[in-house]
Image (cartoon, rainbow, N blue to C red):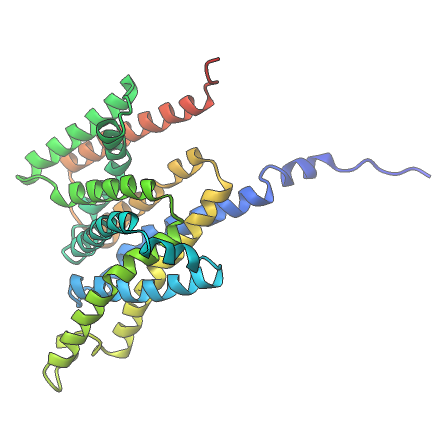
Length: 319
């Protein structure tokens, strides 16, 4: 009796990605797709002021992520931070940075400047290099220098084109860059860190929304609704800002466990690329030759940065 040899071709194909790598890849794609699609979500709330949107985002994301850390038994890590004044001080700074970043992003969406916001997230990895050089004593190699010069040239072109600095791009890039720099020093799980930041802002956000609710004119129209006095659809969307905030964070945390940093670094450009397509093809934001040239310079800088980073990680360490 003879037996047929196993089909090794199908075995090789099925092992192209390990189960953990597949899980990490799907999680990363999910995270960046949610982040990439988020301008459309916040655009649906354009009838609500940006500061009210952020207040709701703080409240509902705080509730959701708190439930997450309780279910994963990380509440002890959360309480430890409040017992450590030095770490808590750092989190006060990161809270101000991420709050400003969120507010700027939502303001840009409400004012039809998604394209300028996307540029900020393209610039961010290059800003991280610059901040590492200034604050961590890291040295730039020639290719990293070229990448940063490409970003500087792109900002200069846009400044000449629009007549002023692309402040939205710069605020988003530098606020998130400093945020990442400070969070790196805390050594805290991302979900736990987000709970600390949102709980620090929670009383302010809740107090602000309650004030708007109780001082609103009785019988105000839907357009004049404020605080918690929105129609059911708008209130549901505002509650959903917590899901839009917490879900990609959870997915990204999962991806970071199973994927190489290089892979995540490449995938992170998916979100701002989606922002560009949404801005240009859905909301018809202007994308003339000057803007195209500026974005091309950024893309060139990112390609150089990514290739250099990939080669650096593959290079064997010196003995």
